[in-house]
Length: 228
Length: 133
Image (cartoon, rainbow over all chains, first blue to last red; front, side, top):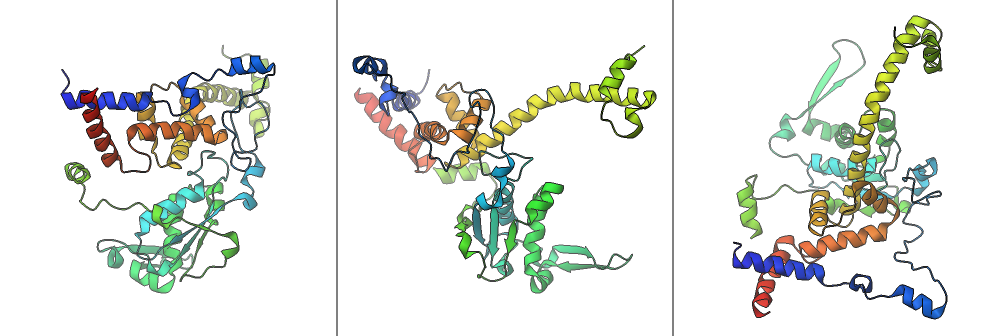
């Protein structure tokens, strides 16, 4: 036997679901009747998508799935996004940038085609890492290809030297490795400081979409208690 | 015996190097090709479903709903659309897809409001009016 509030809540949900939100849902829109009276068959347009939003799909829409063409991947059609790295956690920022560059934010995502966007990251020298990583996280590189000529530097040292490289390496690790991955890596533009030369592309700010670590720690009970 | 020679030559067309012209290699590569095709027919179904899920996820996240929440909501609403159709809607019929997402958001809580606040407010208000009815 369900508890009273549980019963009431499910009834409330049923009522909310059942409440008609438009004429089509009431089932009382007698389109055929209207057409009969007017002696004219008018196609009922349920949803008119804007011409710029939906991809220009030529062909049998009902029987063939959408697959992007080369024209859909043209750089001129790509959006530009900007992220301000000041004070942001490195990995969380890189995840967001990689998602947009790969194109996984689009319902027209195709893994074999470059459907993604361009991403600008500014204030690269102000990106942060948590814990002791600033002095402990190391970056290894081969210097001139000869055996023994390698160097290791910490996050702090690299940020002093070439801060853009930190974000580029982070995003590169999150992009696919291969021909397409190498191509789309170039769609990340990282700049030291706040100035960038892409004002003409009118980049959209997506800094607030960076995911945040839950403040109360990993315990699910604590999170649930915080929600109530 | 195995594959007949004329079958092998037909399958081995376009293979690289001696595999297209020499019977021993052609036989090996043709058989491997058939194995790949057999496995690929099964994998194709998995890969397509995975791609549909990724596309639906992207489409619903555009409207602030994750894929898991979206599917849970559709099950609750008894919407029987499969992932293939949902991904097609998300890609080519954005307003129809948005209507579906809005239904799920409306059912799970006030659109735009916090999920916890919305559902508890709805539950509290609902229980009050249910008693009255």
